[in-house]
Length: 113
Length: 109
Image (cartoon, rainbow over all chains, first blue to last red):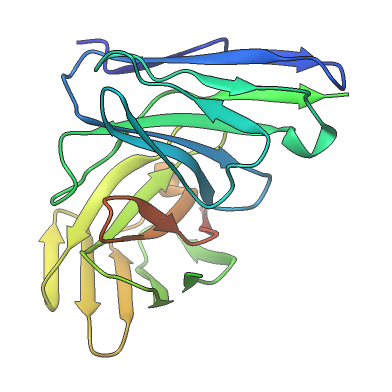
């Protein structure tokens, strides 16, 4: 199993550009999550999904969109990138919401200039 | 909102013991996780407590007191490779995790 994979690993965007961060898991997990981590800070939840076709906002959803058309994929879309979105983005997945060990992808480092 | 507090930094000597405290005030509680995160890497799971008491796993132990909103992670026989950030996270009722800012532990020779 590859676990949780994310692409790209690094990206530099100009203000106002758009991009999609890809996330795929091969563990047949129902729950998937997107976090951002700013320097010296903990992870903040952007969006999450409890299954295909179902998504919900987390703590910091503004400026982002998600979709979940399959169990495996959970892309994060940035529209009109802003410098405040410079961060490291982690995707994670878990089997259920009870005992909920989350498995994290390697992260995407995004810089908006 | 959720409030999860842990110290910013701790330093200890190789072979010593370090205790990282975490206090929380959250709108729900389904358990508490500790994750380890090395610089530039993704968090990895260390422990999970849902009932009061101590969970021991090798050199790492984690304690929970739900009535006090308190947990700690105990790292024994510190090794240089234990230098990392340790994240306390509360599992909320919707299945999402709310994280503290993390404690950076530096192990010195």
